[in-house]
Length: 161
Image (cartoon, rainbow, N blue to C red; front, side, top):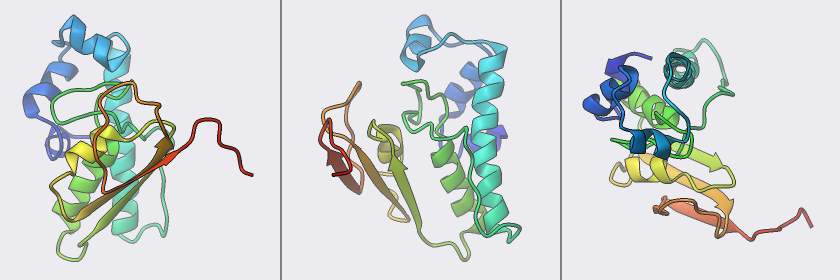
């Protein structure tokens, strides 16, 4: 993913500091793993893969597309947390709105993870064109809970019955 695409969602200074290895110890601790060239490549390719999947659908090259290395929903505008450096979903949604906004008017983000998609919820809290839906385990919050457009909390220990 390019810096131009990243900065549709993330603070340019944050993105540069991460890529250049200038994060503080506490910032890296919040992300959850130490900085390395490999972590930079992984973080950029994660966001890039999700952007590529969105572009494939929007360009008409695919009817449906996905990216298994994505889902980094705990990354915020100016920080990462919970093993999420860049919010690939946020970057892809913002790139889609920028590049296909003449006909793409609404985006639905469906987040089905045990943890609430707090970074994604916060990123799009004031963006009416993006609706965030998070279904997650009630009470399983390792950091501050944010408000999605729709949050559904599933009780801990719930089964299919």
